Length: 140
Image 1 (cartoon, rainbow, N blue to C red):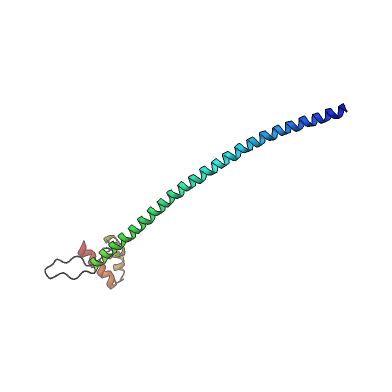
Image 2 (cartoon, rainbow, N blue to C red):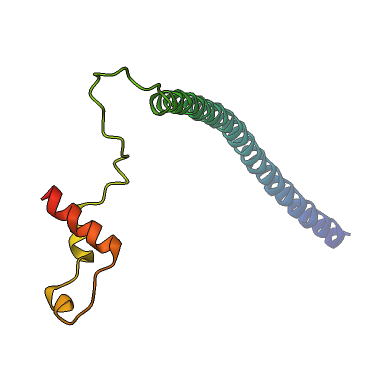
């Protein structure tokens, strides 16, 4: 019976050591769970703050887009008023009626002009080419 008692004491000692290890494991698991919960709470708080910041940024962008839209509308109104203005009374100095985009720079006209060798070969200039050449002579 002493063998049986020794065996049971050994098993009881093993169970005690297993129980102690389990207590240590549960304690470490509890600390891990606590840190995870704290981390989750910190992350949720940080995400709430970033969401607030993002909402502020989006609202500012939206407001700036609205302001830019209304500024563009005002500018368009001013341009339409300027372009649709009534003729000035006589004696008023007329402004240039041509839009700046319609006026070609001299370099474009020079590039389109023919070389003297083309005239010597009997090629005649078209009407538009003669007008361009006259404009070049007048403006230069």
